[in-house]
Amino acid sequence: MGYDDNNVFAKILREELPSHRVHEDSHTLAFMDIMPVSKGHTLVIPKSKCENIFDLDEEFLSAVIRTTKVVAEAIKKTFAPSGVVITQLNGAKAGQTVFHYHMHIIPVYEKAPFQPHPKDVEDDAVLASVAAEIKQTLA
Image 1 (cartoon, rainbow, N blue to C red):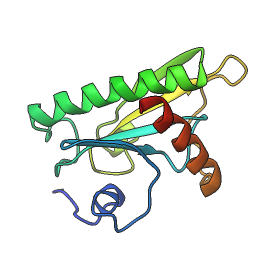
Image 2: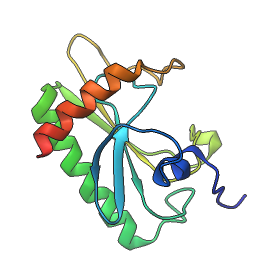
Image 3: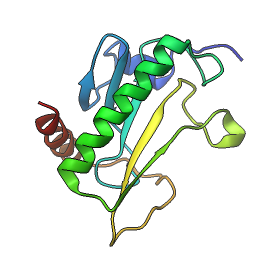
């Protein structure tokens, strides 16, 4: 298939599309999922061209894992979920819809058990507010 430079995450990295960024370093970017499964659902992507884990250089893979842990800890501290799902999908048949490697950090709450990914885009103001809370914890 080959990496598509016009995928939505590539455009977010180039700042051609808006995103609610919560963390960024030289190798990774973490931002709010626009169709969150739960409050705090965040994505972590490498700043490299890779469709899936099989294309990802080990340097970027370890950076993504480090960022995922840092952001998941901030989400846990900020929102006190009863659990956190950390997942990653490889290939369309596995459920991957954006073909740029990414990790999902999905908080799970006692009164809101884990659900499949919704089809509706969340209100921008809600995403901005949640992102601000996570960034405050990371600061």
